[in-house]
Image (cartoon, rainbow, N blue to C red; front, side, top):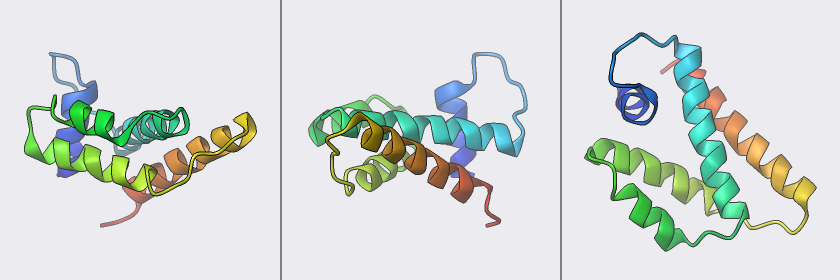
Length: 102
């Protein structure tokens, strides 16, 4: 349910259409990748908090901040290869968790 709210707010244009579960999970993985990219680029946690306040839904804010908190438990890496691997692994973990049966 939360996944649907988050997807609807972030990626669904003004007209409604159905996304498959894999498409929904891919969108969540892309958001996770973007958050981890920002983490690896040194974006401050407080900036992420401000971004979350732009969401209209409390559920989406909480979901976004869950991703942020998860990303910010990982350390910033020094090499571009390390950063890219961290981003890919983080994104894949969200995609896999999203597809896992509830």
